[in-house]
Every structure is written in C-alpha cells, then in structure tokens.
Image (cartoon, rainbow, N blue to C red; front, side, top):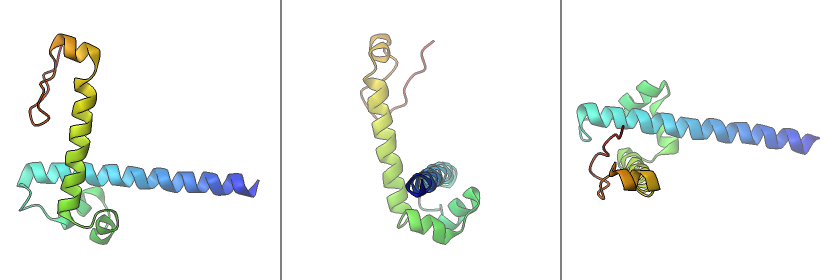
Length: 105
C-alpha cells in the first residue's frame, strides 16, 4: 500500500512539473512574440507564470534553452500535422515548418 501512495505522489509531482514547463514555454512564447527575443527577460516570463525567476532557471538554464525547446515543439507539431492523411490530401499544410499552416474548412 505504501508503494502505491508513493507512486501516486510521484506521479502528481511529475504532472505538476510537466504543467509548469508548459506554462513557462507558453509565457516565453508570448513574451518573445510581444517584445522580441532580445528584449524579453526571464523575469517577465516568470512574472507571467506567477513564479520566481529562480524557478524558471530550475527548468531552463536561460532564454536560449527555453527558445530552443519551444522551436523543437513547433517543428514536432508541424510534422505531426503535415503527416496526417487528411491534412496532406486537403493541402492544409505546407512543407516548411517556418510557414503557417492554413486552416481548412
């Protein structure tokens, strides 16, 4: 029984940690979009999430790592969308991850 409780607590912590990473990435994306990468600060990203700047650094070593992680996610999601049979058939996506996908419908 104790093992089950431990696994549940560990699972909750992991879930909270994953949500925190998503929140930081979202805030970073928004701040970068509004201010540009060079004008954006980790302090502002932290403020938007409602956490300390030190907490941001516990997940990402700096803005460069945060931006790199976000870019990887964008590329991965673009590949997923591009590889969907319906999206390819309807021409809803381009072959370039840097271009925006058209919305079909």
